[in-house]
Image (cartoon, rainbow, N blue to C red):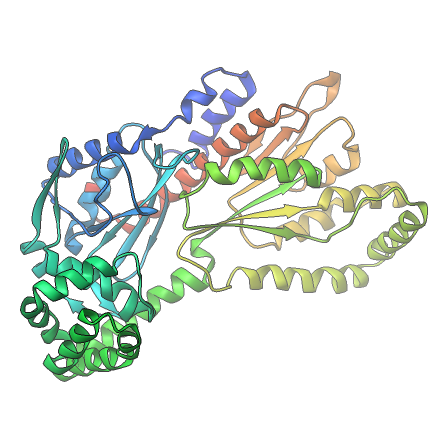
Length: 477
C-alpha cells in the first residue's frame, strides 16, 4: 500500500509546477458513461445488483441524489471491487451501517458543477434491524429493464411500491409524496399480491388496514398506521425469533451510534489565513464542486475569534485582552480549556452518515496581535494547543506578503509547515496533511488546488478504511 500522502504529493507537484493538466485531472465523466462502465464491471464480477428506484431517467439522468442498489450481503466486496476498477473513478468516502454501505465516488457528474456521486449498496430492508421485506425475495422476483444501451434489474412492481412507501412511512414516520401516485396505483391493481407480501411481516389485519388507507389516499390513516405497523413488525419478529431479533436491534443501534455520534464519519478541513471575504468566495466555488463527495457539507467558525479593526480604541482594548491572554499560563488554561472541550464535543454531535466539515480559523490574527504587543509568543504553547485539538483531515494555511513573520512561524510552523519566504519565493509545501498556499493567486486556481488536496486526502483516508474493513477479503483490492 502507498504511503497516505503519495497521491497527495502527486497533486502537490502539479500545483507547484503550474501544470496546465491540473484542470484535466479533475474532469468528470458523464453519468451515462459511469453507468455503462459500472454495469459492465458488475458483469465481470458476476453479480447483478437490483436498482431500487429513481431509474426512470437512466442512463442519461439521475433523478435522486445517489444510486441505490440491492445486493446480497456476501456480494459487498465484489461490488466495491467493481466500483474501484473503473478508470477515472476514485472512492472518496465510505460509511457502513448494519444494512447498507454508503460510498461516495469522485470523477462522475450528474449535476452541473458537481464531480461526485453517492452510491448505496443495501442488503437488508428493515426498520431498527427488523426486516420488513426479504432481500432474497426481491432479488429472485426482480425484472429486467432495458434503457438505451443499458440492461439492469429492478424490483417487481409490488416490491418496488412497498419499498417506496415503507422507506419513508415505516422508517421515518412520514409520507414521501414523490412516490405516492405510483404506490397507490400498484396497491389498487395488485392488492392481493401486496397483502400477501406484507402479511408475513405485519400480519393480515395490519397489512389490510394499510392497503385500504393507501387505496383511498387517506393520508391521516396512513400516518396513524405507523405505530401499529412498528408494533406488529416487532411483535412477529420476537414471536418467531426472539434471540436473533434482539441481537439485530442491538447491532442496528451500535452501527447508528458509530455513524452518527462518533468522529469516525466526520472529516474536518481547517482553513486559516484568508480574509473573511476571500474565504467566502473560495468556499462558494468549492462547496458545489464537493457536493456528493460526502453526505453533508458544513461550515463553522473554529478557534478563538478576533475581529480586525482600524479603530485605535478597539485595538487598544483588543491588545490588552491579548496581553492578558498570554500573560500567564493560568489565564491561558482558563481561556483555552473550555474551547478545547467544546471542540471535542462537536466531534460527537448527532449528524448524517458522512460529513465533510470546513472549520474557518482566525489563529493568524490572534497570534499576529500577540506578537506585535508582546514581542514574543512561546511556540511550544501553540504546538500544545494544536496537539490537543480533535483530529482533522487537512489543514490549509494561506499567506501573502502582509502575513507577518510571527503568524507564519507560530501557526504554520506549529502545524508542521515550514514556509520559506526568502528572495520572494512562494512557499507551497505540504507535509503530511498540511498545505500552505500563497493567497494572492487567482481565485479559480486556489479553488482547484484546494479541491485536489481535499479529494486526494479523502481518497487515501478511504483506501485505508476499506483495507481495514475488508482485510480478509482480497477481492476488494
